[in-house]
Image (cartoon, rainbow, N blue to C red):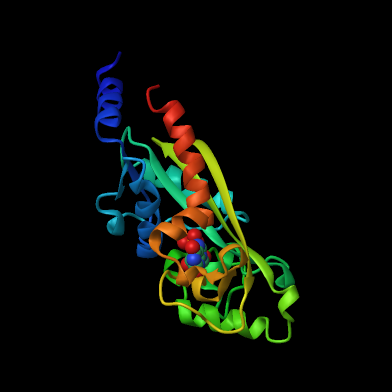
Length: 226
Ligand code: IMP
């Protein structure tokens, strides 16, 4: 076995450390919560904030997740790097904000310019726009879902992707103090709470990100000794 391959295999079996390519502290918090019970350490990529930004111009969550994972895995030789793309799809809005969820309040949203991570708009403005768009939509038509696609890559190549969803209803006013993004407006009927009313453990159990991450863990368990 080549020395580099041996080193990778040993470090994986000893530390079970997975690197996540994100600067979003809310997402990082969710991943750490989901990994806790699996004996896996989740860490950001060292020096992530100084790496070149990846333009998220894919038309799907999967395309953007793969693009980020492939780009950032080139900076972590031999390690598995996970990247996610996620967002909210609202049925009454034809699936919007979708891949534009992080910058829904931007005035140039529908321009053809590629999505730069630094063009993101703040959570309060995004939530305010969502409420405006749904102003005349009755409760029974305010259905939607959070979607998360995770891509696992190593040395610039995608190894696999994993999709998780959570179905809910968009409220007409925020509820709850936890979480991030659209969590306060996303009511999850199964436990009659918004995502912003969930503890970290509950969110990892019910959320799109937790579902995608569990699929990744199954895959990782089956592949981590190869
Ligand atoms: P991206 O995946 O970094 O492109 O952005 C995802 C955006 O979708 C976030 O900035 C949030 O606005 C929204 N989003 C994704 N996942 C969640 C979640 O778990 N809770 C609330 N909002 C989310």
